[in-house]
Image (tube, rainbow, N blue to C red):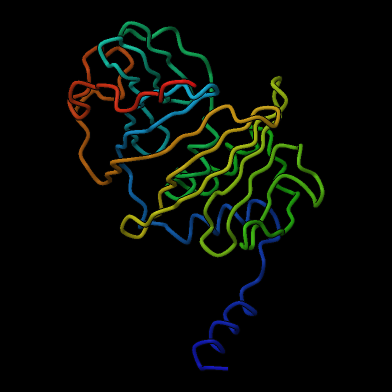
Length: 250
């Protein structure tokens, strides 16, 4: 065994496994504290059943802010997540918000930039049982599962890579037969990682495929971008045109 391999083995043996989900959250935060970006934009190819395509222009500000403008931008369709609320946009104007904590945003990005105790409280408030954990393997990777014991794939739970502490799966029961989302194609941006695809199943069937393009981080967002009273089109999206169209049917 090489010296490097021996050293790595020693670190692995000397580092205790997380005792519960709260420890997993603390470890995920500690791994990237001070290294994760806080602003991002990207253009998303969104595919729905029947090969219906939409172009989503997305801007993020951590923690907890995500704006989505749906092409064509002239239609004024979109949504804004902020202050634990969702504001739907119709014809460029925000409809009354509804309370919503965005679990994907919390587990993909906020977990790495906010106090772990805040994340722990948010996850507990969302109904994740952080006392239940187990380890498993998927696609050749060692994973930590939080929110369920071995054999349970229906309780609210999230799966994280054991080495990079990145979200790879999120399961949430709902009235549509249960959501099962998978996150992959991570690319490194500085010292952080950004998922490139999200596959969302509802009741075991593909409900939405998200593919990221034109990812940028570290920019200064224009003033008022996450203000629900704003009606102007964001400057960064240009005309906000459709980027993809479905191929012709048979």
